[in-house]
Image 1 (cartoon, rainbow, N blue to C red):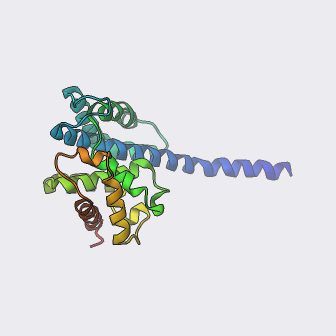
Image 2: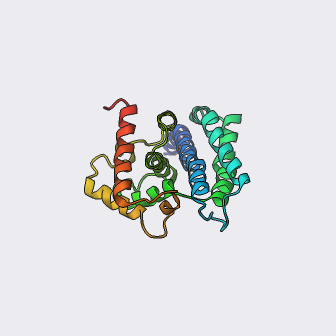
Image 3: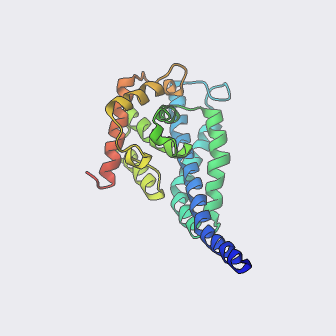
Length: 229
């Protein structure tokens, strides 16, 4: 009996190693998804002169931190994910932890939130997405915001390809909502446009219709770059 219990503990310990690595990697990548929005939402708030989460206008220091956050994600994100999957902590991992916490935290508080987090809030109406982490939904929300802004093709492509490389969702299917209907997506768009939500910090007028179109387009772009279309 003791031998059986000992072996069970050994098996659990052995099985736990890859599980712990997977959890650490996914949580960190989700943090990167949340941090990804920092620069783009700060940029939108600066352009619209929206009030920041701290109650003031976006400062130059906040923008500098938000931009450093973005640059760190682009440079270190993939390296950090690979290292975590190998079960090790490297300088890239440490830099990503700094970006996910300090740079993103100060950046969003001192600059503000906009479209990406509002889309996250809208996605909460879909039960199919409830198992996804906050940052995973925010990452998709960032793509939707970029579509709303009609950013240059190169910028949109860079962000989509980076999300794919680190493992952040770029389609409804990857969000767990592959069978979502247009009616459900309109409910997502309406929720994102709720009075007082941060989507109204964008430097232009948003409507449920324009948000619905951007959500659909973001999914289509994601499928395109995944080679599904």
